[in-house]
Image 1 (cartoon, helix red, strand yellow):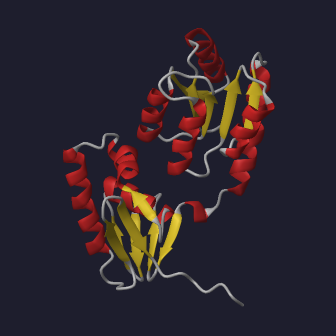
Image 2: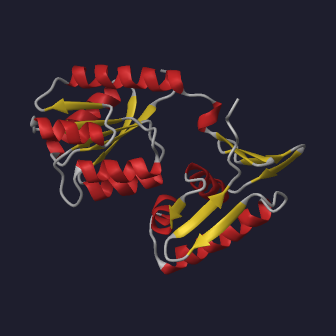
Length: 235
């Protein structure tokens, strides 16, 4: 691998977690270990990961709940569940929540890595520019380069502006929950961060004002809705 892939590893058994982290590091992965689901959620909000490996039975927030919250932020990231359970209902629940794989303890560390590599190969094969580029009326938003393009004009966005617009794009014409945006970008949904987010929403509205078809509306008590034209796909 030219670049280390970053793995979020959530396992409440500290001894097993440390062994897994060391093994993944030996296999040239960059692995962050969290010992409970709440710590895992905070880590996911702060960092960029290529894959999540989640134990199902964890304190403060179990793997299923954590996976739901991760999926609300990123619908594409691969998730593997680790569990001591082998009940069919639990396996079904894991896949219903969007798991890419499900491994029952005890398991071989080699098997885990083989399964991870198979999933990552498939994911890398599917990636294209559409995962980072959004069409917003007359604008094109390149979230990787943090640039908003309008014809020959390019506007460089700040990191916070880009992160917030990216979330809005992923929820286009739907409500972006205020709490989700705050926890994803600012980590904490306190009063001061909420006021800061309002400022960034105002900045984004100014950046997008040249296209009257694009709006960012307040949804009282819930959050924001990015209104974008829906393209007619009929041939």
